[in-house]
Length: 458
Image 1: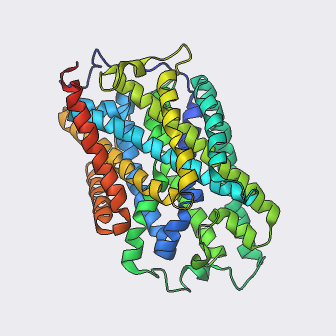
Image 2: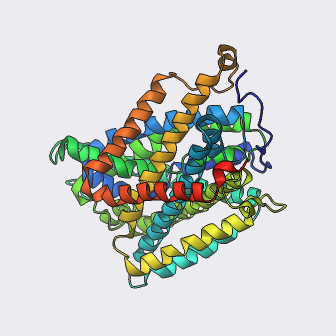
């Protein structure tokens, strides 16, 4: 029999609190965040119109990673999600590193989102210091995460409705502008996809260099696995959420970016404001630009809210296995790990300091740092899934309720793509800092693992 057909005694099934509706909208909202609304500008500048291919390739990897996570989560929804699956199938140290790397990823992504909010606020308050908006945002999301799990789900439900509605409206509005020739007709048109230097204006190297920012945009989608363990019925909620991924990628990334590129020549998308806001600012529709700015701020708030939620739950799972301080395993009657959440919020105070000291470079730095952590976690999810399959008997494979498609080719493609992305970070000098910090974090946590005696804790 497989070692995963029964639940280990020290694995805790999580207290339920989220309905299928919550999980579906958390999954939907996880695809729409700062990486799309703001980070897409840097990806467009690097690759030009060929960035659309990068989003398709990255989206394919995300889909196979989430299907792998979904298969394991439906089979055994446990505290700690992928960190626990990694521990079970790859070993204690990989599980420990994966959990802490995910927490590191979420903190870094939160810093990026906090920074993005402060940049968005320049639209109305160009002379106000960025750190003030970072502090105000932390107060809002801190209160949300210290409330009950169901309250968190309702907030994400509301945030997602706003984000999805805005992107759909932008796509429809952009299509209308193109169809009826509104605005400056000399600047708009599908021909923008090839007029200025062709579809690959910066060559293959430019397209490859965009991989980092594109994968950053997809970071956080793995929260489906974490939130799924909070569902009232994980067996139904998780497959429904994961199966929407291809449509979400095509609509919200490829569709939205295609409209942006058709409305504005790619060289004019500078990153000084969200490309979504820039479209309407350029066309002189100021009220629409202001409304979209509210939406992108909502998107960033949603992302921070979800990231703190995900990191807190994974660290709680690690603590239950003796891989994090025991106090982090404590949850209150509402299912909230108060101590862990408070620690995460305390760490995020560094965002106030960074935005006070390095307001112009914070987003670029933290985005590259987050990408290293993101793809490392994805890699471990995929490797844990491959290991779990190898331990199963043919009968157990046949009994899977949510098996991955195209096994094993999709998994091997995704693993190879992630390894290639690490190679890009070695190749391009601007990502050496992120690579060094990521490797340094791995070494630091490995030393802490052995010094603390955690290999001997059972």
